[in-house]
Amino acid sequence: MVDTATKSGAYAGAARPRSSLKRLMQRKSTIAFLLTLPLILIIASLVIYPAFYAVHLATLSKSMTKFVGFGNFTFLFKREVFWMVVQQSCIFAISAVVFKALIGFFVAHFIHAIPTKGQRKWRGMLLVPWVIPPAMSTLAWFWLFDPSYSAINWLLALFGIDPVPFLGNPYWARFSVILVNVWFGAPFFMIMYLAALKSVPEQLYEAAAIDGANWWQRLWYITLPMMRNIISITVMFSLIVTFANFDIVRVLTAGGPIDKTHVFATYAFLLGIQGGDIPLGAAVSLFMVPILGISAIFILRDVTKRGNEA
Amino acid sequence: MTATATFEKDRRDRGGPTRPVRHGSMSRDRKRALFWSYFFLILFVIFFLTPPIYMFITSLKSSTEIAGATNPWWVFDPTLANYEALLTSSEFLTFILNSAMVSVLVVSITMVVSVMAAFALSRMRFWGSATLATGIFLCYLIPETLLFIPLFKMFAVVNEFTGIQLLNKWYVLVLVYPTLTVPFCTWIMIGYFASIPKELDEAALIDGATYLQTLTKIFIPVALPGIIAATIFAFTVSWAQFLYPLAFTTSSDQLVLPVGIVTTLIKGDVYNWGQIMTGALIAAAPPLVIYAFLMDYYIAGLTAGATKG
Picture 1 (cartoon, rainbow over the protein chains, first blue to last red):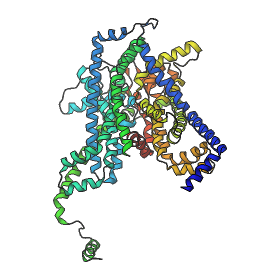
Picture 2: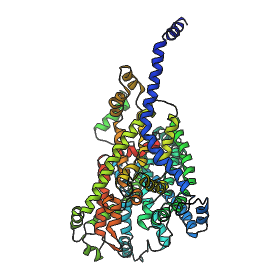
Picture 3: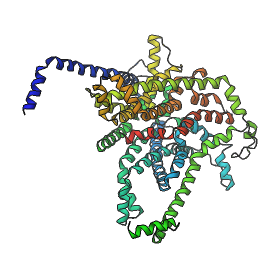
Picture 4: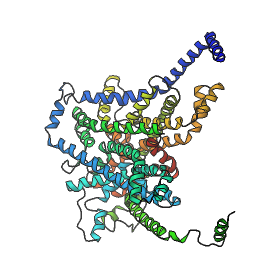
């Protein structure tokens, strides 16, 4: 008691050190501000500002001289191609994410099941699609799908199967862009799930084995609940990336045949940059915002939850 | 030592089976599970590695062999002519140079900006620092496909008012790529810096070190694995980026590698597939080489976003 009293007395008496301490605090926050300033400038001028600028652009006429309000949006609503883009974007994103998630999950399990010594080698080979720049690997797929020299059709011919018009038929083209996207994205899921699998404590499985749990029960009651958080973060993150995908569709089909494979990004590029109608392109790309926003909220919730758990 | 332990030891010394026989059925199950795991792993490796291998096969073929429509999966007459043609073409070398300049500059800017910001955000709590950290993470989730049109218009407006030519110049990419790399790199560096014990830098501050010294003498050396992971991430993102260069650059002397290959090697309906595949393989090589040598850092950077948080 006396001790504290003397201490506080000592502090109260020392007015000068306290004010210099205050100055130090001021200096510290100044330093912190200066250190984060470049980051804030980059984000504010090249992310936040353009995002709002896009909203402004979307309300202008094609020559960008006149305010047309929701004119661009109502124009889009009346076009059949736009609704096809909405439909295709959803089909593309949802089916690709589902298959990526499933393939990633199973491949991660297969790797986890083999002896630890060999895991590194397999993991190394299986992550290669993710490492190659997507525009470049899509060129290889384009060449594999080539109408006259398709190497896949050559293999199919060995089994007596007729050549498949991978990029010529609208439905096969839709299948092809999804296939390439799954090929590119599944390794990312695999690596995330593998990290999650490794973090499940071995004792849980031992306890379950003693209780006589079978493989399905171990998966359902231990693995999935322990991985739930990473699964949802990965799925939501992939949904954003796939929904906003540009490279694969652009290189593989450029939206064709007859606009059947366009997604929001390629359609916005076609209208805004190639067609020169910047406001209309901006309006198209803004349609991605709702789904991105919803996914972002879920990711943020899960990431902060993980932060609290740790 | 108990009797059973001695027995166990003796049996092992004699090279006898250490595992009790009654687990026979269990190990048979394990063997079957192992077999199927390898079986499916091989299938998926074939699926995942076919395109890059096919790239390589085609890159060794001459145009006559490709046009001959022989077995596409085999090279009958291997030639390095495609590599020679591309690596002596001044246009292609310009693409490589542009890509290299953009990537090196972007990686340098990214690392300086994000290490400084992560240091401030992980150690100096100031007004709004928590909000800022969350905001940075959210910025990482904004895709480039949402921003390329307003950015395009912004650069045109900048040119109108200041006369600074940004569109159709390779350095515009140095300006925009950090928006893709900085948020994520800052985010994972915050995670790495936060894992450094506070006592370490507090001791340094008590000894009279400045903030700059604690950053360069303690944080950067201790968090070096994180810095390597973030550098790899920044490099692969800026090397592979396709949309921004496609939208912002058009003259062939300003293009970077991926866009250069897609726009100049594909001419009309005439595809020189041998050269296209060679170019694609050359463009894929730097990330693949980095990945081959620094796989653990690469994967650490990949999984850090969700597992460090």
